[in-house]
Image (cartoon, rainbow over all chains, first blue to last red; front, side, top):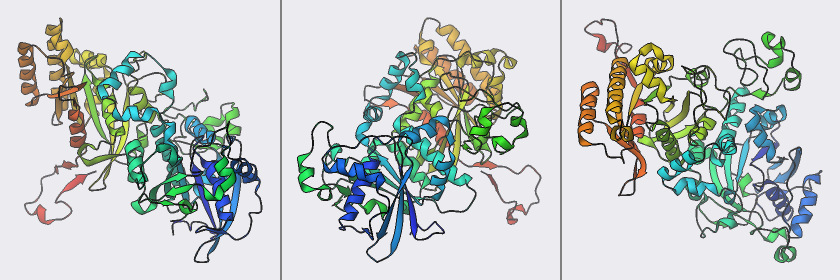
Length: 285
Length: 312
């Protein structure tokens, strides 16, 4: 088990990594709802002592509405007391924060103390990526190189485009910073497990049984190459995730979700492409 | 970012980490400065790389760990050097693996991103700056990429120079005029020499040929045993046959080789010709075999310590 990093062996710390709107909080809320219904590989032993992080969001989602943005300042941790199928009890600690906080680390080139602690303490990093939010990536992958080169000669100076890293480069820089932070901590700890979670899988309209790792490799080859060079093969994997099974809209409540209940929507796409309704899967090996 | 920085030469704290590895509040040099930043941000972790292209001092971030390989990209102004660099990185972004070498990280991601936007040169000094500071300005620099071989699992750090063509034109005519080109000539493991097909086919093709001849001579003399690969850039442009013959003659004379074609534009068959730069990468990353310099006893091969030295 790659999770046993802490002296306090009864708890695992899992860090969700992802930019704004990558779907971290939505997953957190759905995860809780699903565990509470006790249909999963990981079940709740008792209700978490502090539910403030998810309670509002849970009500919003149950009304078929999308979640609001988590603010950068939020620094709370949801502790889930769980028991797995073999009867082992643990506390899973999931810190939540606004995705902007990560952007700030990359631009300021400094890792604040509280982030150093999070990065060093966690034994499992879940990387949330929402591919539909990167409209420019297909261009970069398919357009003729000459055409791209010529385009950029034309526009004299677009400072924003120059100073803002494209998504694949940004994510690599963030991971490099996190890996460096850990190396810098000067105590021996095993590398964290890395799970790439492709969120909003339903938006991608992939055929059934399509493997998440293939899709990831096609859309973000540089990031994949970096991850494969940095993490050994049994410490990394790529999963798909659709927390609600569909996209929710701000203006219209989703009647299906209201009637069926949250626990009956949403799925994880396993490494082999098969779908699984157990949303605790990304937290397990 | 703060404008205050450590008064010591070669130290760019707090922008990058203190060269003594100290925290900002512990450093006696930095504490001389009156600064709010000292108190506020004392315990944050500062990164030893800025993401921008490397100046000569910044290079220590990689050279301290292993022997990085350096490709010197040489050619006159507008010869297509930048486009070739941008295309090289774009191909990596598409998952290309030159010679089985896969992308494994880069400390100059912002630098690569700027290259692909073809920024014009900021007012350029005669040599590489020790440290680059701004995302918006382009300065002569070195770009970094870490590569891992997919079969052997070996890691290598690769540096590729991004320097203005004016340096090389000056250097060709007078070696001392361009300290930046001299630095590159001294340190590069391999040189790529760009011939500009557009200039060699234009109205001033006579002058362009002479400039190429001079530059080729200079590179050949500086390189010594190190390899030089001539490249015919913008090969989609046809060079008049007589000029072309003379250029080939120059390449044969100095480098005993023919130039490889490079073009980012699509050919009739639909493929851009971009392989030459990737071939260079493959070549420069091979292990360097160093011949023992001392005279060895006849039976030295039986001594396992002397048998062969491989420098990584």
